[in-house]
Image (cartoon, rainbow, N blue to C red; front, side, top):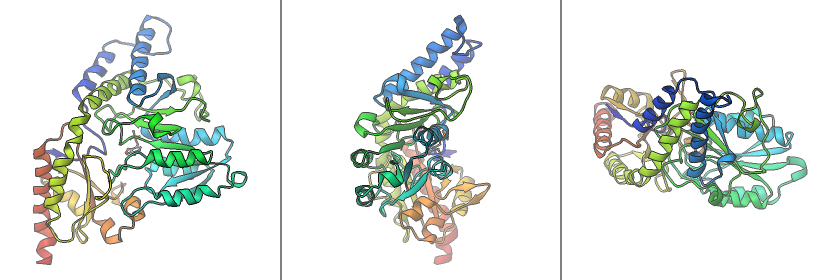
Amino acid sequence: MIYADHNATSPLRPEARDAMQAVWDMGATNPSSVHTAGRAARAVLEKARAAIGGAIGSRAEDVVLTSGGTEADNLAIHGIVAALEGKCTFLVSAIEHEAIAKAAAFSGARVETAYVTPEGIIDLEDLTARLSDWDHDAKGVPVLCLMLANNETGVIQPVAEAAALVREAEGLTVCDAVQGLGKIPVNVAMLGVDYLSLSAHKIGGPQGAGALWHRAGAPLKAVQQGGGQERGLRSGTENVAAFAGFHAAIEAALRDMPKYAKLSTHRDEMERRLEEVAGVTVMGKGADRLAGTSNFALPGFAAETQVMAMDLAGVCISAGSACSSGKVKRSLVLLAMGASDALAESAIRTSFGWNSTPEDFKGVADAWLQAAKRTVLKEKA
Ligand SMILES: Cc1ncc(COP(=O)(O)O)c(C=O)c1O
């Protein structure tokens, strides 16, 4: 089997498995308990927090541990609204993950869409224009939501430039760095953002573990009530084993980052072969992209058909369009980039990661070319 769906979830790294097993072997691990067993669990948790903070250039105490990227995004959005008593307007980039876009829509605060260029990069001119005549009285604090790297196209965003514009307008920036962590350098000071969300399972850590970093002093209120864990910002007993796994995965991903960067050579060669087929378009190709992500389309070759054909050939990929309850919807990300319906309906995403090999890229190209020849290309011939 070739696994080319790392942006959905990455296989668990052996280091993460071992670290989690070690915690399970400790027995009872409630890090809030004051007895010896509890203190041992606390030590594991705080080491993980320090490693997560270290990976993004932050202090450990500014990291809130969560149950994943979705919860981190929701805590940021709803926590800001609670702290500002609704006096804010979210400027949500048109390519945000639903964990941000839907949370903002549901938050009750005003929401505006920040446009992207055809390459899938936030349009900084549009952002500048929006912020230049910002009416603080009517709209409250501008809160930009801009991800670091897009999960569908891999396109890396000019977060530092955008955040600087927002700062000038006395606003705040929320950055979903779930797809960037461990693949490209992430440093909260250099990005100049106020909130940054992370997830363990995109880099070979376990599912169900994530974090929200927030700048000290940035407005943020708890949105769930309970035992007051995580400095009162996220009640609920922390999953100690999962954070030990996240810790191990982060260390391994940082170590492997140069290796990950080299995947672009194989990705580019794969795309070169695909593009030999007339009509194939690689989405966001002209932009700076994650080395292991390629989203491409051949109008007329439905995404579901491609995913099924590839699956039969032993290759796991995703439809470029979002898939929910078995139905494929056209991707809002691709439509925001100006893709035609035909392009959006035929887009698929391949994503490679820590255990991908050059043969995997070749295998994906071989399988896709064969599937295309058997179906659409035959019809077109
Ligand atoms: C950009 C982005 N943000 C947030 C999430 C949600 O993360 P999690 O699955 O840890 O809740 C994902 C996962 O698909 C993602 O790609």
